[in-house]
Image (cartoon, rainbow, N blue to C red):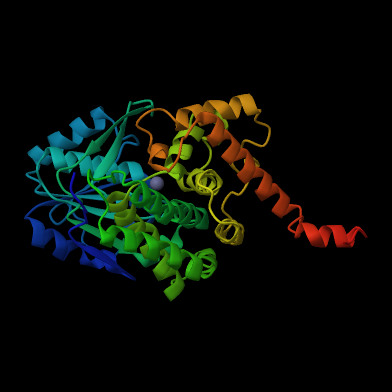
Length: 379
Ligand SMILES: [Zn+2]
């Protein structure tokens, strides 16, 4: 196995960046087609100031699921309209449909995320579901997207919960990259991590700590500030390159385990991943100082720190064990962590993270010696 890293062809981010789309399409081909969700079509496109007439850039409305039916429909349109550049604009499923359809047609894809809730836009993989939304397969494209275009005004206008979830996804990047590096495990593009992947992952974490709170506040006001700019880049570009080129470990495996419990389905990917990070730190024997920093960050930006925060406040240990078992299925990235990983260890890590999170909320964050002192017991 070799060291390997993958990147999007171009990454463009800024206020009004959507205006670059016509020139980008021209650069990559002759006939573009924009696939977008109904909500983006109705709320975002009318204000984006580019010519989306059938003669310029025809628009196709996404039918709601990234499934084989929708992919076949897109393939037929691509052939019929002689499309040689496909644009996917919206959330995860719209983007994934455009990625797979473009890959099958051997044409470049331009990705325009309208929310910064995950690090998927820059990646060269996409998830396909059944028509009823049940996971079917992950498809790996021949190359990463030809271009990723991020308009900060569009991201700032979206609900804050998406940005915060994206910070949860981005929070995992450094810890998982570090674990893969320590155990010399494979990254997500089939190689060992490169120095660039590792450094980008670390810088992603540092950016979150420095600008997370201010970025969230800007999003709440729906304004673009330098802090929001930094956080969007961390969520989409730094985390995107970081996870693909440096690897996944406990946090995403615990996320995958948690999806086995229906109570967590109302929560975003990044919200479950954030709890996976906290549990992963308990599993990997992280220092108390590091654990403290990550808990504080999650509390400050409003990411989950307890099982109750992801719908599992009343879940029994037996039920949580189902998630722990799914986390540890062979092939899951939790095995990129050092040491012997068992469902019992993973369950214990989840319970420990939850207990710390609850203790912090109820204000019992005191040093044991101080607690004794306050209770009148001193040495
Ligand atoms: Zn993720």
